[in-house]
Image (cartoon, rainbow, N blue to C red):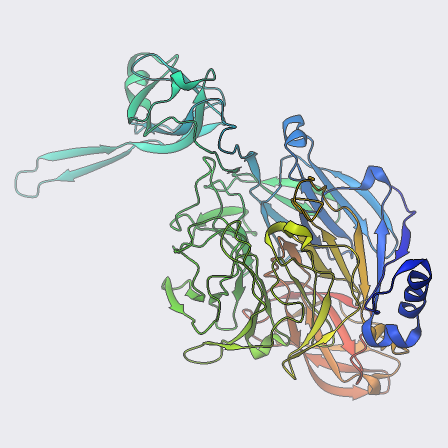
Length: 636
Protein backbone atom coordinates (compact mmCIF):
# COMPACT_ATOMS: atom_id res chain seq x y z
CA UNK A 1 0.00 0.00 0.00
CA UNK A 2 1.05 3.54 -0.65
CA UNK A 3 0.27 6.66 1.30
CA UNK A 4 1.82 9.60 -0.55
CA UNK A 5 -0.59 11.63 -2.65
CA UNK A 6 0.09 15.06 -4.06
CA UNK A 7 -2.73 17.54 -3.59
CA UNK A 8 -2.66 20.13 -6.33
CA UNK A 9 -4.84 23.21 -6.05
CA UNK A 10 -7.08 23.50 -9.10
CA UNK A 11 -8.29 26.76 -10.63
CA UNK A 12 -11.71 27.85 -9.51
CA UNK A 13 -14.53 30.21 -10.27
CA UNK A 14 -12.54 33.44 -10.43
CA UNK A 15 -12.60 35.62 -13.58
CA UNK A 16 -10.50 34.34 -16.50
CA UNK A 17 -7.21 36.20 -16.94
CA UNK A 18 -4.31 35.82 -19.34
CA UNK A 19 -0.61 35.24 -18.85
CA UNK A 20 1.52 34.06 -15.97
CA UNK A 21 0.77 37.08 -13.80
CA UNK A 22 -2.95 36.60 -14.33
CA UNK A 23 -2.69 32.93 -13.45
CA UNK A 24 -0.84 33.80 -10.25
CA UNK A 25 -3.51 36.31 -9.33
CA UNK A 26 -6.24 33.77 -10.07
CA UNK A 27 -4.49 31.29 -7.80
CA UNK A 28 -4.31 33.96 -5.11
CA UNK A 29 -8.02 34.82 -5.36
CA UNK A 30 -9.36 31.28 -5.16
CA UNK A 31 -7.35 30.59 -2.02
CA UNK A 32 -8.72 33.52 -0.06
CA UNK A 33 -10.85 32.62 2.97
CA UNK A 34 -13.78 34.74 1.79
CA UNK A 35 -13.77 33.11 -1.63
CA UNK A 36 -13.75 29.59 -0.16
CA UNK A 37 -16.55 30.48 2.26
CA UNK A 38 -18.73 31.56 -0.67
CA UNK A 39 -17.80 29.14 -3.47
CA UNK A 40 -15.90 26.25 -1.89
CA UNK A 41 -12.53 24.86 -2.90
CA UNK A 42 -11.12 22.12 -5.18
CA UNK A 43 -8.07 19.88 -4.89
CA UNK A 44 -6.73 17.56 -7.57
CA UNK A 45 -5.43 14.21 -6.37
CA UNK A 46 -2.58 12.56 -8.24
CA UNK A 47 -1.97 8.89 -7.49
CA UNK A 48 1.33 7.12 -8.13
CA UNK A 49 1.27 5.53 -11.57
CA UNK A 50 0.83 1.96 -10.35
CA UNK A 51 -2.42 2.89 -8.55
CA UNK A 52 -4.07 4.83 -11.36
CA UNK A 53 -7.07 3.07 -12.84
CA UNK A 54 -10.01 4.00 -15.05
CA UNK A 55 -12.79 4.80 -12.57
CA UNK A 56 -15.93 3.29 -14.13
CA UNK A 57 -17.76 2.52 -10.86
CA UNK A 58 -17.44 3.94 -7.34
CA UNK A 59 -19.07 2.90 -4.06
CA UNK A 60 -18.53 4.39 -0.62
CA UNK A 61 -18.10 1.58 1.91
CA UNK A 62 -19.13 1.63 5.58
CA UNK A 63 -15.40 1.72 6.41
CA UNK A 64 -15.16 5.14 4.78
CA UNK A 65 -13.06 3.74 1.94
CA UNK A 66 -14.11 3.96 -1.70
CA UNK A 67 -14.27 0.88 -3.90
CA UNK A 68 -13.35 2.00 -7.42
CA UNK A 69 -13.95 -0.59 -10.13
CA UNK A 70 -12.40 -0.39 -13.58
CA UNK A 71 -12.63 -4.00 -14.71
CA UNK A 72 -11.06 -3.81 -18.15
CA UNK A 73 -11.70 -0.06 -18.05
CA UNK A 74 -13.13 0.31 -21.56
CA UNK A 75 -9.81 -0.91 -22.92
CA UNK A 76 -9.93 -3.77 -25.42
CA UNK A 77 -6.28 -4.64 -24.82
CA UNK A 78 -6.83 -5.03 -21.08
CA UNK A 79 -9.88 -7.19 -21.78
CA UNK A 80 -7.97 -9.42 -24.18
CA UNK A 81 -5.16 -9.77 -21.64
CA UNK A 82 -7.60 -10.61 -18.83
CA UNK A 83 -6.40 -7.59 -16.84
CA UNK A 84 -9.24 -6.48 -14.55
CA UNK A 85 -8.70 -3.92 -11.80
CA UNK A 86 -10.34 -2.58 -8.65
CA UNK A 87 -8.84 -0.02 -6.27
CA UNK A 88 -9.61 0.53 -2.61
CA UNK A 89 -8.88 4.12 -1.59
CA UNK A 90 -9.09 5.83 1.78
CA UNK A 91 -9.62 9.56 1.00
CA UNK A 92 -8.92 10.57 4.61
CA UNK A 93 -5.74 8.61 5.34
CA UNK A 94 -4.70 8.71 1.65
CA UNK A 95 -3.97 5.00 1.50
CA UNK A 96 -4.82 2.78 -1.43
CA UNK A 97 -4.39 -0.74 -2.69
CA UNK A 98 -5.29 -2.79 -5.73
CA UNK A 99 -7.87 -5.53 -5.15
CA UNK A 100 -7.80 -8.83 -7.13
CA UNK A 101 -10.76 -8.68 -9.50
CA UNK A 102 -11.98 -12.11 -10.68
CA UNK A 103 -14.15 -11.07 -13.65
CA UNK A 104 -14.53 -8.13 -15.98
CA UNK A 105 -17.00 -6.00 -14.00
CA UNK A 106 -16.72 -3.17 -16.52
CA UNK A 107 -20.22 -1.73 -17.02
CA UNK A 108 -21.93 -4.08 -14.58
CA UNK A 109 -24.37 -2.93 -11.92
CA UNK A 110 -23.92 -2.55 -8.15
CA UNK A 111 -25.59 -1.59 -4.92
CA UNK A 112 -24.89 -1.75 -1.18
CA UNK A 113 -26.65 -4.52 0.74
CA UNK A 114 -28.12 -4.29 4.28
CA UNK A 115 -24.97 -5.82 5.82
CA UNK A 116 -22.67 -3.36 4.06
CA UNK A 117 -21.45 -5.76 1.40
CA UNK A 118 -21.57 -4.48 -2.18
CA UNK A 119 -23.41 -6.59 -4.74
CA UNK A 120 -21.79 -6.36 -8.19
CA UNK A 121 -23.73 -8.09 -10.96
CA UNK A 122 -22.97 -8.39 -14.66
CA UNK A 123 -20.11 -6.97 -16.66
CA UNK A 124 -18.42 -7.53 -19.99
CA UNK A 125 -18.29 -10.85 -21.80
CA UNK A 126 -17.16 -9.44 -25.12
CA UNK A 127 -16.29 -6.01 -26.53
CA UNK A 128 -18.20 -4.45 -29.40
CA UNK A 129 -17.09 -4.77 -33.02
CA UNK A 130 -18.18 -1.91 -35.26
CA UNK A 131 -19.34 -2.07 -38.86
CA UNK A 132 -16.47 -3.21 -41.06
CA UNK A 133 -14.51 -4.60 -38.11
CA UNK A 134 -16.35 -7.93 -37.88
CA UNK A 135 -14.22 -10.59 -39.61
CA UNK A 136 -16.06 -13.78 -38.67
CA UNK A 137 -19.75 -14.33 -39.37
CA UNK A 138 -21.64 -14.65 -36.10
CA UNK A 139 -25.05 -14.65 -34.50
CA UNK A 140 -27.25 -15.91 -31.69
CA UNK A 141 -27.45 -19.71 -31.35
CA UNK A 142 -30.55 -20.90 -29.51
CA UNK A 143 -29.48 -24.21 -28.01
CA UNK A 144 -32.35 -26.62 -27.33
CA UNK A 145 -32.66 -29.68 -25.11
CA UNK A 146 -35.55 -32.10 -25.72
CA UNK A 147 -34.47 -34.45 -22.92
CA UNK A 148 -36.80 -33.91 -19.91
CA UNK A 149 -34.52 -35.80 -17.54
CA UNK A 150 -31.51 -33.49 -17.23
CA UNK A 151 -30.05 -30.10 -18.18
CA UNK A 152 -26.94 -30.00 -20.32
CA UNK A 153 -23.89 -27.74 -20.18
CA UNK A 154 -21.75 -26.98 -23.21
CA UNK A 155 -18.36 -25.30 -22.71
CA UNK A 156 -17.07 -22.31 -24.60
CA UNK A 157 -15.82 -23.44 -28.01
CA UNK A 158 -18.54 -26.04 -28.62
CA UNK A 159 -18.93 -26.57 -32.37
CA UNK A 160 -22.30 -26.16 -34.06
CA UNK A 161 -22.49 -27.53 -37.61
CA UNK A 162 -24.85 -26.18 -40.27
CA UNK A 163 -26.68 -28.52 -42.68
CA UNK A 164 -24.10 -27.67 -45.36
CA UNK A 165 -21.15 -28.50 -43.05
CA UNK A 166 -20.06 -24.97 -42.10
CA UNK A 167 -18.96 -24.77 -38.46
CA UNK A 168 -19.46 -22.13 -35.78
CA UNK A 169 -18.01 -22.01 -32.24
CA UNK A 170 -19.78 -20.85 -29.08
CA UNK A 171 -18.06 -17.90 -27.40
CA UNK A 172 -19.14 -18.75 -23.82
CA UNK A 173 -20.29 -21.62 -21.65
CA UNK A 174 -24.01 -22.34 -21.88
CA UNK A 175 -26.29 -24.48 -19.71
CA UNK A 176 -29.51 -25.59 -21.37
CA UNK A 177 -32.37 -26.52 -19.03
CA UNK A 178 -34.12 -29.88 -19.32
CA UNK A 179 -37.24 -30.12 -21.40
CA UNK A 180 -40.60 -29.72 -19.73
CA UNK A 181 -42.91 -32.74 -19.90
CA UNK A 182 -46.63 -32.16 -19.53
CA UNK A 183 -49.12 -35.04 -19.12
CA UNK A 184 -52.81 -34.40 -19.82
CA UNK A 185 -55.38 -37.10 -19.04
CA UNK A 186 -58.73 -37.18 -20.84
CA UNK A 187 -61.33 -37.46 -18.02
CA UNK A 188 -63.78 -39.36 -20.25
CA UNK A 189 -61.48 -41.98 -21.74
CA UNK A 190 -58.54 -41.95 -19.37
CA UNK A 191 -56.22 -41.55 -22.35
CA UNK A 192 -52.99 -39.73 -21.58
CA UNK A 193 -51.31 -37.21 -23.86
CA UNK A 194 -47.68 -36.33 -23.21
CA UNK A 195 -46.25 -33.05 -24.50
CA UNK A 196 -42.54 -32.27 -24.33
CA UNK A 197 -41.40 -28.64 -24.62
CA UNK A 198 -37.70 -28.28 -25.30
CA UNK A 199 -35.56 -26.37 -22.82
CA UNK A 200 -33.71 -23.48 -24.45
CA UNK A 201 -30.81 -21.15 -23.73
CA UNK A 202 -28.95 -18.92 -26.15
CA UNK A 203 -25.26 -18.37 -26.72
CA UNK A 204 -23.29 -16.31 -29.20
CA UNK A 205 -21.50 -18.31 -31.89
CA UNK A 206 -19.03 -17.27 -34.58
CA UNK A 207 -17.54 -18.96 -37.66
CA UNK A 208 -14.38 -21.02 -37.31
CA UNK A 209 -12.75 -18.85 -39.98
CA UNK A 210 -13.03 -15.32 -41.35
CA UNK A 211 -14.70 -14.36 -44.58
CA UNK A 212 -18.03 -14.05 -46.31
CA UNK A 213 -18.22 -17.77 -47.03
CA UNK A 214 -19.69 -18.30 -43.56
CA UNK A 215 -22.42 -15.67 -43.92
CA UNK A 216 -25.89 -17.24 -43.89
CA UNK A 217 -29.01 -15.06 -43.91
CA UNK A 218 -31.41 -17.99 -43.59
CA UNK A 219 -32.71 -19.78 -40.47
CA UNK A 220 -31.22 -23.21 -39.95
CA UNK A 221 -30.90 -26.06 -37.45
CA UNK A 222 -27.38 -26.95 -36.33
CA UNK A 223 -26.03 -30.19 -34.93
CA UNK A 224 -23.70 -30.27 -31.94
CA UNK A 225 -20.39 -31.76 -32.96
CA UNK A 226 -19.39 -34.84 -30.99
CA UNK A 227 -22.88 -35.94 -29.93
CA UNK A 228 -24.25 -39.32 -31.00
CA UNK A 229 -27.42 -41.38 -30.59
CA UNK A 230 -30.21 -39.88 -28.50
CA UNK A 231 -28.07 -36.91 -27.48
CA UNK A 232 -27.62 -35.94 -31.12
CA UNK A 233 -31.39 -35.99 -31.59
CA UNK A 234 -32.29 -34.21 -28.37
CA UNK A 235 -29.63 -31.49 -28.35
CA UNK A 236 -29.20 -29.05 -31.24
CA UNK A 237 -28.93 -25.37 -32.14
CA UNK A 238 -31.22 -22.99 -34.00
CA UNK A 239 -30.09 -19.71 -35.54
CA UNK A 240 -31.90 -17.15 -37.65
CA UNK A 241 -28.77 -15.91 -39.40
CA UNK A 242 -24.99 -15.62 -39.27
CA UNK A 243 -23.72 -12.24 -40.46
CA UNK A 244 -20.84 -9.79 -40.48
CA UNK A 245 -23.06 -7.07 -39.00
CA UNK A 246 -21.94 -4.75 -36.17
CA UNK A 247 -21.75 -6.53 -32.82
CA UNK A 248 -22.61 -4.75 -29.55
CA UNK A 249 -21.02 -5.31 -26.16
CA UNK A 250 -22.12 -8.54 -24.49
CA UNK A 251 -22.91 -9.01 -20.80
CA UNK A 252 -22.18 -11.69 -18.22
CA UNK A 253 -24.32 -13.54 -15.68
CA UNK A 254 -21.67 -13.44 -12.96
CA UNK A 255 -22.34 -11.85 -9.55
CA UNK A 256 -20.10 -11.10 -6.58
CA UNK A 257 -20.28 -9.45 -3.18
CA UNK A 258 -17.43 -7.22 -2.07
CA UNK A 259 -16.71 -7.66 1.63
CA UNK A 260 -15.47 -4.43 3.32
CA UNK A 261 -13.91 -6.41 6.18
CA UNK A 262 -11.82 -8.86 4.14
CA UNK A 263 -11.53 -6.31 1.31
CA UNK A 264 -12.12 -9.03 -1.25
CA UNK A 265 -14.75 -10.28 -3.70
CA UNK A 266 -16.89 -13.29 -2.80
CA UNK A 267 -18.70 -15.12 -5.59
CA UNK A 268 -22.47 -15.57 -5.32
CA UNK A 269 -24.72 -17.53 -7.73
CA UNK A 270 -24.96 -16.23 -11.28
CA UNK A 271 -27.99 -14.32 -12.47
CA UNK A 272 -30.35 -16.14 -14.80
CA UNK A 273 -29.74 -13.50 -17.47
CA UNK A 274 -26.53 -11.90 -18.63
CA UNK A 275 -26.38 -8.13 -18.18
CA UNK A 276 -24.22 -5.24 -19.36
CA UNK A 277 -25.40 -1.75 -18.23
CA UNK A 278 -27.98 -2.98 -15.68
CA UNK A 279 -29.47 -1.05 -12.75
CA UNK A 280 -29.64 -2.55 -9.24
CA UNK A 281 -32.00 -0.90 -6.73
CA UNK A 282 -32.41 -1.88 -3.08
CA UNK A 283 -35.92 -2.46 -1.74
CA UNK A 284 -37.47 -1.95 1.69
CA UNK A 285 -37.20 -5.64 2.55
CA UNK A 286 -33.49 -5.73 1.77
CA UNK A 287 -33.86 -7.45 -1.59
CA UNK A 288 -32.45 -5.98 -4.78
CA UNK A 289 -34.36 -5.60 -8.05
CA UNK A 290 -32.17 -5.92 -11.14
CA UNK A 291 -33.32 -4.68 -14.53
CA UNK A 292 -32.20 -4.09 -18.12
CA UNK A 293 -28.83 -4.54 -19.78
CA UNK A 294 -27.42 -6.10 -22.91
CA UNK A 295 -27.37 -9.90 -22.78
CA UNK A 296 -24.63 -12.32 -23.80
CA UNK A 297 -25.49 -11.93 -27.48
CA UNK A 298 -25.47 -8.11 -27.40
CA UNK A 299 -29.27 -7.75 -27.44
CA UNK A 300 -31.10 -5.52 -24.96
CA UNK A 301 -33.18 -7.50 -22.49
CA UNK A 302 -36.90 -7.44 -23.18
CA UNK A 303 -38.27 -6.64 -19.72
CA UNK A 304 -39.67 -10.06 -18.88
CA UNK A 305 -36.25 -11.00 -17.54
CA UNK A 306 -36.01 -8.71 -14.49
CA UNK A 307 -34.62 -10.44 -11.39
CA UNK A 308 -34.67 -10.17 -7.59
CA UNK A 309 -31.65 -10.91 -5.40
CA UNK A 310 -32.23 -12.05 -1.81
CA UNK A 311 -29.04 -11.28 0.18
CA UNK A 312 -30.15 -13.50 3.08
CA UNK A 313 -30.16 -16.62 0.89
CA UNK A 314 -27.94 -15.33 -1.90
CA UNK A 315 -30.48 -16.49 -4.47
CA UNK A 316 -32.02 -14.97 -7.58
CA UNK A 317 -35.70 -15.14 -8.54
CA UNK A 318 -38.09 -13.74 -11.12
CA UNK A 319 -39.12 -10.08 -10.76
CA UNK A 320 -42.17 -8.38 -12.31
CA UNK A 321 -42.00 -7.44 -15.97
CA UNK A 322 -41.24 -4.00 -17.38
CA UNK A 323 -38.95 -2.87 -20.16
CA UNK A 324 -36.30 -0.20 -19.53
CA UNK A 325 -33.39 1.14 -21.57
CA UNK A 326 -29.98 0.49 -20.05
CA UNK A 327 -28.93 1.98 -16.67
CA UNK A 328 -32.41 3.35 -15.92
CA UNK A 329 -32.67 5.56 -12.83
CA UNK A 330 -35.08 3.74 -10.49
CA UNK A 331 -35.77 5.24 -7.06
CA UNK A 332 -37.51 3.44 -4.20
CA UNK A 333 -40.45 5.57 -3.03
CA UNK A 334 -42.04 5.75 0.41
CA UNK A 335 -45.05 3.90 -1.00
CA UNK A 336 -42.82 0.95 -1.93
CA UNK A 337 -43.09 1.61 -5.67
CA UNK A 338 -40.14 2.34 -7.93
CA UNK A 339 -40.05 5.69 -9.70
CA UNK A 340 -38.41 5.66 -13.10
CA UNK A 341 -37.30 9.25 -13.75
CA UNK A 342 -36.62 8.62 -17.43
CA UNK A 343 -32.87 9.06 -17.00
CA UNK A 344 -30.84 6.32 -18.65
CA UNK A 345 -27.40 5.75 -20.08
CA UNK A 346 -28.04 4.78 -23.63
CA UNK A 347 -28.84 1.47 -25.24
CA UNK A 348 -32.36 0.77 -26.42
CA UNK A 349 -34.72 2.09 -29.11
CA UNK A 350 -35.64 5.77 -29.00
CA UNK A 351 -39.37 5.05 -28.91
CA UNK A 352 -39.53 2.42 -26.19
CA UNK A 353 -39.15 2.57 -22.39
CA UNK A 354 -38.23 6.25 -22.23
CA UNK A 355 -41.38 7.51 -20.46
CA UNK A 356 -41.07 8.30 -16.70
CA UNK A 357 -43.50 6.66 -14.30
CA UNK A 358 -44.23 4.76 -11.11
CA UNK A 359 -43.72 1.00 -11.29
CA UNK A 360 -45.67 -1.04 -8.74
CA UNK A 361 -43.91 -4.36 -8.15
CA UNK A 362 -46.97 -5.79 -6.38
CA UNK A 363 -49.30 -5.73 -9.38
CA UNK A 364 -46.75 -4.92 -12.11
CA UNK A 365 -48.61 -1.74 -13.06
CA UNK A 366 -46.94 1.38 -14.44
CA UNK A 367 -48.37 4.87 -13.90
CA UNK A 368 -47.02 7.39 -16.40
CA UNK A 369 -45.67 10.65 -14.94
CA UNK A 370 -45.77 13.35 -17.60
CA UNK A 371 -45.06 17.05 -17.84
CA UNK A 372 -41.31 16.90 -18.42
CA UNK A 373 -40.08 19.19 -21.17
CA UNK A 374 -37.54 17.93 -23.71
CA UNK A 375 -38.65 14.32 -23.09
CA UNK A 376 -36.54 13.17 -26.04
CA UNK A 377 -33.37 14.32 -24.21
CA UNK A 378 -33.32 12.11 -21.14
CA UNK A 379 -30.38 9.95 -22.13
CA UNK A 380 -27.27 10.72 -20.02
CA UNK A 381 -29.36 12.99 -17.77
CA UNK A 382 -28.94 13.14 -14.01
CA UNK A 383 -31.62 12.29 -11.45
CA UNK A 384 -31.72 12.68 -7.69
CA UNK A 385 -34.19 12.08 -4.85
CA UNK A 386 -34.19 15.56 -3.35
CA UNK A 387 -33.49 16.02 0.35
CA UNK A 388 -35.17 15.32 2.63
CA UNK A 389 -36.44 12.01 1.28
CA UNK A 390 -39.69 12.57 3.19
CA UNK A 391 -40.63 15.23 0.62
CA UNK A 392 -40.71 12.50 -2.08
CA UNK A 393 -39.53 14.78 -4.87
CA UNK A 394 -37.28 13.59 -7.68
CA UNK A 395 -35.38 16.04 -9.87
CA UNK A 396 -34.16 15.40 -13.42
CA UNK A 397 -31.29 17.56 -14.65
CA UNK A 398 -30.06 18.01 -18.21
CA UNK A 399 -29.56 15.14 -20.63
CA UNK A 400 -29.19 14.64 -24.35
CA UNK A 401 -30.61 12.96 -27.41
CA UNK A 402 -30.55 9.23 -28.01
CA UNK A 403 -27.29 7.64 -29.09
CA UNK A 404 -24.58 9.88 -30.51
CA UNK A 405 -26.89 12.85 -30.84
CA UNK A 406 -25.18 16.24 -30.27
CA UNK A 407 -28.37 17.58 -28.64
CA UNK A 408 -28.37 18.54 -24.97
CA UNK A 409 -30.76 20.40 -22.70
CA UNK A 410 -30.49 22.77 -19.74
CA UNK A 411 -33.91 21.67 -18.55
CA UNK A 412 -34.62 20.53 -15.03
CA UNK A 413 -37.90 19.11 -13.80
CA UNK A 414 -39.26 18.08 -10.42
CA UNK A 415 -41.86 15.38 -9.78
CA UNK A 416 -43.79 15.44 -6.49
CA UNK A 417 -44.52 11.77 -5.88
CA UNK A 418 -46.92 12.49 -3.00
CA UNK A 419 -49.58 13.63 -5.47
CA UNK A 420 -52.27 11.19 -6.57
CA UNK A 421 -51.37 11.95 -10.19
CA UNK A 422 -47.72 13.09 -10.12
CA UNK A 423 -46.44 15.32 -12.91
CA UNK A 424 -43.18 17.11 -13.51
CA UNK A 425 -43.06 20.84 -12.95
CA UNK A 426 -40.26 22.97 -14.41
CA UNK A 427 -37.24 23.72 -12.29
CA UNK A 428 -34.57 26.36 -13.00
CA UNK A 429 -32.43 25.82 -16.08
CA UNK A 430 -28.89 24.62 -15.53
CA UNK A 431 -26.56 27.65 -15.37
CA UNK A 432 -24.09 26.08 -17.81
CA UNK A 433 -26.75 25.50 -20.48
CA UNK A 434 -27.33 22.17 -22.20
CA UNK A 435 -25.54 19.48 -20.16
CA UNK A 436 -25.09 15.74 -20.47
CA UNK A 437 -23.34 13.45 -17.92
CA UNK A 438 -23.93 15.84 -15.01
CA UNK A 439 -23.19 14.37 -11.56
CA UNK A 440 -25.49 15.29 -8.66
CA UNK A 441 -24.61 14.76 -5.00
CA UNK A 442 -26.85 15.27 -1.94
CA UNK A 443 -25.08 17.34 0.73
CA UNK A 444 -25.74 17.27 4.50
CA UNK A 445 -27.14 20.84 4.41
CA UNK A 446 -30.09 19.62 2.28
CA UNK A 447 -28.72 21.04 -0.97
CA UNK A 448 -27.59 19.20 -4.11
CA UNK A 449 -24.13 19.81 -5.55
CA UNK A 450 -23.93 19.32 -9.33
CA UNK A 451 -20.74 19.30 -11.34
CA UNK A 452 -19.18 18.62 -14.71
CA UNK A 453 -20.78 17.19 -17.80
CA UNK A 454 -20.46 18.20 -21.42
CA UNK A 455 -22.73 19.90 -23.94
CA UNK A 456 -22.09 17.29 -26.65
CA UNK A 457 -21.86 13.52 -26.86
CA UNK A 458 -18.84 12.27 -24.86
CA UNK A 459 -17.24 15.71 -24.75
CA UNK A 460 -16.92 16.02 -28.54
CA UNK A 461 -15.54 19.35 -29.84
CA UNK A 462 -13.92 19.95 -26.43
CA UNK A 463 -17.39 20.53 -24.96
CA UNK A 464 -16.68 19.57 -21.34
CA UNK A 465 -18.22 22.13 -19.00
CA UNK A 466 -15.87 23.35 -16.29
CA UNK A 467 -18.75 24.48 -14.14
CA UNK A 468 -20.29 23.50 -10.82
CA UNK A 469 -23.35 24.75 -9.00
CA UNK A 470 -25.51 24.00 -5.98
CA UNK A 471 -29.26 23.49 -6.13
CA UNK A 472 -31.34 24.72 -3.18
CA UNK A 473 -34.66 22.85 -2.88
CA UNK A 474 -36.07 25.42 -0.44
CA UNK A 475 -35.73 28.27 -2.96
CA UNK A 476 -35.79 26.17 -6.15
CA UNK A 477 -32.67 27.92 -7.39
CA UNK A 478 -29.00 27.40 -8.24
CA UNK A 479 -26.00 29.22 -6.84
CA UNK A 480 -22.56 29.19 -8.44
CA UNK A 481 -19.85 26.99 -6.95
CA UNK A 482 -16.11 27.03 -7.50
CA UNK A 483 -15.29 25.60 -10.90
CA UNK A 484 -13.29 22.39 -11.42
CA UNK A 485 -10.40 22.30 -13.86
CA UNK A 486 -10.80 18.65 -14.92
CA UNK A 487 -13.48 17.95 -17.51
CA UNK A 488 -15.95 15.15 -16.72
CA UNK A 489 -18.28 13.43 -19.18
CA UNK A 490 -18.90 9.75 -20.02
CA UNK A 491 -17.85 7.24 -17.31
CA UNK A 492 -17.70 9.85 -14.53
CA UNK A 493 -18.87 9.65 -10.92
CA UNK A 494 -19.23 11.83 -7.83
CA UNK A 495 -20.03 10.93 -4.22
CA UNK A 496 -20.27 12.39 -0.73
CA UNK A 497 -17.62 11.56 1.88
CA UNK A 498 -18.32 11.13 5.62
CA UNK A 499 -16.47 14.37 6.33
CA UNK A 500 -18.82 16.36 4.08
CA UNK A 501 -16.51 16.71 1.07
CA UNK A 502 -17.29 15.45 -2.45
CA UNK A 503 -15.08 13.19 -4.56
CA UNK A 504 -15.31 13.38 -8.37
CA UNK A 505 -13.78 10.63 -10.53
CA UNK A 506 -13.46 9.38 -14.08
CA UNK A 507 -14.24 10.72 -17.57
CA UNK A 508 -13.91 9.05 -20.93
CA UNK A 509 -14.08 11.61 -23.77
CA UNK A 510 -13.80 10.50 -27.38
CA UNK A 511 -11.37 13.18 -28.55
CA UNK A 512 -8.72 15.44 -27.06
CA UNK A 513 -9.03 18.35 -29.52
CA UNK A 514 -11.82 20.62 -30.71
CA UNK A 515 -11.56 19.30 -34.26
CA UNK A 516 -12.18 15.72 -33.01
CA UNK A 517 -9.08 14.30 -34.70
CA UNK A 518 -6.93 13.26 -31.72
CA UNK A 519 -8.10 10.30 -29.58
CA UNK A 520 -8.43 11.15 -25.90
CA UNK A 521 -7.19 9.17 -22.92
CA UNK A 522 -9.24 8.18 -19.90
CA UNK A 523 -9.14 10.83 -17.18
CA UNK A 524 -7.45 9.27 -14.14
CA UNK A 525 -7.11 12.36 -11.98
CA UNK A 526 -9.47 12.58 -9.02
CA UNK A 527 -10.80 15.82 -7.58
CA UNK A 528 -12.09 16.63 -4.11
CA UNK A 529 -14.51 19.50 -3.61
CA UNK A 530 -14.78 21.10 -0.19
CA UNK A 531 -18.16 22.90 0.05
CA UNK A 532 -18.42 26.41 1.54
CA UNK A 533 -19.99 25.08 4.75
CA UNK A 534 -16.61 23.70 5.82
CA UNK A 535 -15.12 27.22 5.75
CA UNK A 536 -17.67 28.72 8.17
CA UNK A 537 -15.84 28.04 11.42
CA UNK A 538 -16.26 25.24 13.93
CA UNK A 539 -18.47 22.35 12.97
CA UNK A 540 -20.91 20.41 15.19
CA UNK A 541 -19.64 17.23 16.80
CA UNK A 542 -21.05 13.78 17.34
CA UNK A 543 -18.81 12.29 20.02
CA UNK A 544 -20.80 9.09 20.53
CA UNK A 545 -23.72 7.33 18.89
CA UNK A 546 -24.94 3.74 18.54
CA UNK A 547 -23.65 1.65 15.67
CA UNK A 548 -27.07 0.14 14.97
CA UNK A 549 -30.72 1.11 15.24
CA UNK A 550 -34.08 -0.22 14.15
CA UNK A 551 -36.86 1.54 12.31
CA UNK A 552 -38.86 3.72 14.69
CA UNK A 553 -36.16 3.57 17.37
CA UNK A 554 -35.05 6.61 19.33
CA UNK A 555 -31.29 6.84 19.69
CA UNK A 556 -29.16 8.97 22.01
CA UNK A 557 -26.33 10.97 20.46
CA UNK A 558 -23.62 12.61 22.52
CA UNK A 559 -22.48 16.10 21.56
CA UNK A 560 -20.64 18.79 23.55
CA UNK A 561 -22.93 21.51 22.17
CA UNK A 562 -26.32 19.94 21.39
CA UNK A 563 -27.94 23.37 21.43
CA UNK A 564 -26.01 24.19 18.23
CA UNK A 565 -27.54 21.27 16.34
CA UNK A 566 -30.65 22.12 14.35
CA UNK A 567 -31.02 19.10 12.05
CA UNK A 568 -29.98 15.48 11.89
CA UNK A 569 -30.22 13.12 8.97
CA UNK A 570 -29.15 9.72 7.71
CA UNK A 571 -27.53 9.80 4.27
CA UNK A 572 -27.19 6.54 2.37
CA UNK A 573 -23.75 6.09 0.77
CA UNK A 574 -23.47 6.39 -2.99
CA UNK A 575 -22.97 3.55 -5.42
CA UNK A 576 -22.56 5.37 -8.71
CA UNK A 577 -21.64 4.74 -12.33
CA UNK A 578 -22.28 6.59 -15.60
CA UNK A 579 -23.47 9.62 -13.55
CA UNK A 580 -26.27 7.34 -12.26
CA UNK A 581 -26.77 6.98 -8.50
CA UNK A 582 -30.13 5.58 -7.40
CA UNK A 583 -28.98 4.69 -3.88
CA UNK A 584 -28.12 8.05 -2.31
CA UNK A 585 -30.91 9.52 -0.16
CA UNK A 586 -31.07 11.83 2.83
CA UNK A 587 -33.66 10.93 5.47
CA UNK A 588 -34.47 13.54 8.13
CA UNK A 589 -34.57 12.44 11.77
CA UNK A 590 -36.79 13.94 14.46
CA UNK A 591 -34.98 15.64 17.33
CA UNK A 592 -37.13 14.57 20.28
CA UNK A 593 -35.18 15.74 23.34
CA UNK A 594 -32.05 17.68 24.25
CA UNK A 595 -29.87 17.35 27.31
CA UNK A 596 -26.68 19.07 28.43
CA UNK A 597 -24.62 16.30 26.88
CA UNK A 598 -26.53 15.34 23.76
CA UNK A 599 -29.87 14.79 22.11
CA UNK A 600 -32.32 12.06 21.19
CA UNK A 601 -33.18 11.30 17.57
CA UNK A 602 -36.12 9.23 16.30
CA UNK A 603 -35.94 7.22 13.09
CA UNK A 604 -38.87 6.87 10.68
CA UNK A 605 -40.84 3.62 10.74
CA UNK A 606 -41.19 3.11 6.97
CA UNK A 607 -38.64 0.68 5.44
CA UNK A 608 -39.39 1.99 1.95
CA UNK A 609 -38.39 5.48 3.11
CA UNK A 610 -35.40 4.23 5.11
CA UNK A 611 -34.32 0.91 3.53
CA UNK A 612 -32.13 -1.39 5.64
CA UNK A 613 -28.41 -0.80 5.41
CA UNK A 614 -25.55 1.41 6.56
CA UNK A 615 -25.97 5.18 6.70
CA UNK A 616 -23.94 8.26 7.56
CA UNK A 617 -25.47 10.12 10.52
CA UNK A 618 -24.87 13.87 10.12
CA UNK A 619 -25.78 16.69 12.50
CA UNK A 620 -25.88 20.26 11.17
CA UNK A 621 -25.90 23.69 12.77
CA UNK A 622 -28.06 26.71 11.77
CA UNK A 623 -25.58 27.58 8.98
CA UNK A 624 -25.79 24.10 7.46
CA UNK A 625 -22.31 23.16 8.62
CA UNK A 626 -22.25 19.39 9.15
CA UNK A 627 -20.51 17.23 11.67
CA UNK A 628 -18.25 14.43 10.59
CA UNK A 629 -20.62 11.53 10.02
CA UNK A 630 -21.04 8.58 12.36
CA UNK A 631 -21.76 5.25 10.63
CA UNK A 632 -24.90 3.46 11.76
CA UNK A 633 -26.62 0.32 10.52
CA UNK A 634 -30.39 0.56 10.15
CA UNK A 635 -32.49 -2.61 10.34
CA UNK A 636 -36.20 -3.31 9.94
